[in-house]
Length: 75
Image (cartoon, rainbow, N blue to C red; front, side, top):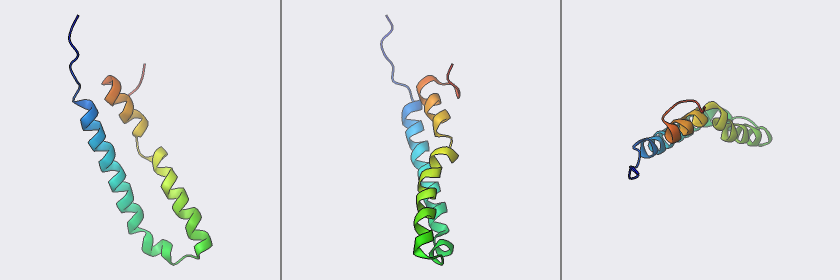
């Protein structure tokens, strides 16, 4: 039986995910001047939307699959 060798993909993927989240946060923060001009009642849904949409915009599902299997798609 071959001894377990840790994969470099998991730490690399973790740093990529953190980088993508940081990039998204900077993007949203750069819009704060524009969003800040809107009424508060509109700002809240905009920030909630931008806070949730990154889950679908960023390729996290494929990145997690790559971290686990070494392939971009499961299967």
